[in-house]
Image 1 (tube, one colour):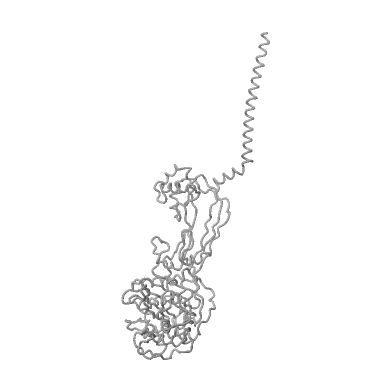
Image 2 (cartoon, rainbow, N blue to C red):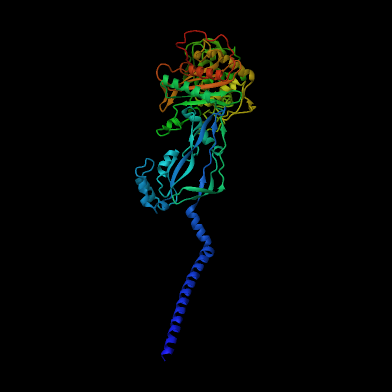
Length: 577
């Protein structure tokens, strides 16, 4: 009995040991099966979902900035360029996971802790907000080096204008997104602007890019634009106009220089100007390109076109005499006056002395619609075709019936409104032997054919007649240029206010051509509201023309056509138009 009991106990212990092993093995088998099942679920069943979740946490799609086209002058000098800058942005949902890290920003000069916290809380449901744009790399580094989760950077471009306010009215400027807002930047927006691209990148837990994965869509840079401007001539015109407006305490002014053969705008400046690189305290009145937007009555600068119409109608020649005695003319209820009684003079002297009576008689001798028709041929009352933002068409009345007083006033530049660019175009037509070519703000490689608007003989006669205006007997002696023959016309007009014509406010004008023997340049100078006794066009605008155009001719190496130089003489009291 005792032996049997000893035999059964070891067997029992063995059975228990076997059971325990089976339990352990079963347990591990179940655990293994669970792990295998979980692995299958993760790697097979939920693979796509988990892969997507991993990618959206580490793989990002970022924009690739497109480089905006460069604006250059005719010689390739940059007038507007885009430079790379750093923009800081944040993912609020990412930043909210680590609010304890925000203290690292402290009183950062770019974006401090308090400002950051407020913006994150305000936009907590967004995935992208701008923090600061257009920063220099060293400025952005003061924020990025703090390693605050949720703050990222991207490269953008900022527009820079090397010539500053010298070309501001022509070139214009862009906004912070590099979209054209004024001038050429706006006019050629479609050409200058590029198409941004997209790429995939991998970021680490701090949001830093550690690898570019794939270019989804490459950026397409904008195309360059080459203007007709010559930066050397632009600087020259800007300097002289600025000096004149300061000297005469004028409200503003404009100057336009054209190549009469190609129609290219070589220089176009205005006062007041602005600095497109620093628009913090910008006066909106300074934004206007007055040469194309502001209108004025051209006054006596219109008289050559009245003479042209009369000559084209075979009514007069340069030597035809006109009786201007006694120095005034009664037309309806209005009395038209000259500066003094010039008596019997020829048509050339009508321009030399700027006789209102003489041009009025020429206008009244023509059929009523003839003079307005010729003015329209010269481009008055129409856009110039340069498609500049805000360009004014001017105002040329086209009536079926004209009163005599209206025809007379039109002959000496009242009752019609023009821009400085329109007036310059009209004088360029005269200088180009009566041929009108389209104006251009872009460089012209092949001069256009244009259209003949008056006979070449008429145009050439007008240029010779206008040379007398710049002689010692004329009203524009200060427009003379040493070494060059100059032809042109002064103008002095009363400014129009809300109460009508002001008795003591004027616009001084000069429009001219040089060299007169073989015209290359046409230019117009406008001095708006000069203060003091000097307000006549021959006193305030003609000297600016001389300085600008003289410099232009020398810069362009145009050969002199005159060897006697200036004749000394008393210039006091000159300039009445």
